[in-house]
Image (tube, rainbow, N blue to C red; front, side, top):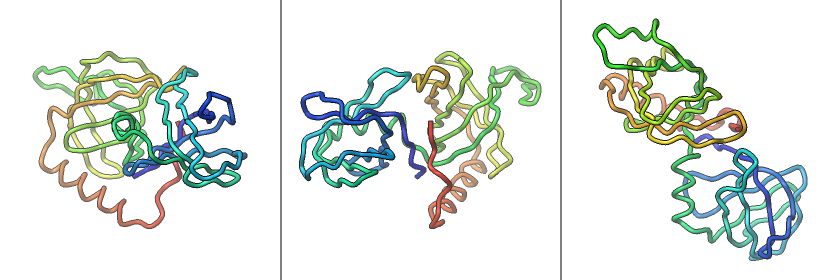
Length: 208
């Protein structure tokens, strides 16, 4: 999985501001990592809270106990499983593909190449769902067609936007449900994800 680091603020149990930085939500477990060029050293099991900043506004607030503390990294544990599950639905990533997606509508002889498009970064792909980050605005219910030839072949896959979450003043995350996908695209995706998992060194962290 590709770690995503998001803007965040570290506070004490009593809401005292300790530091601004970024937070990573691992794909499993009940910990989150807060990092910055400087992170205050805290005793193990100190109660703290790390809050995501989306579009400058406080969002998910992870309350837990200090598990690891260093000059640039703070790991907290004992976080609500329910809250982590909600956050992972939005922020978990397994790919990073910059591409154009066609605004799809069902009609005879639909052409990906002639259809209106948006630019975006696909940061999660599965047989059931797709997550896209884009600075362009589209509505929930809009269908998108993905037509990749690189880094693997993933053609004429159609997905419908089910949720949109504002990441910043510019970027919006679109959570999409796959409504049409070929068996060949499923096989190609599985092979590509397996290849990524086998690599010891993944690409650089995604920074939204």
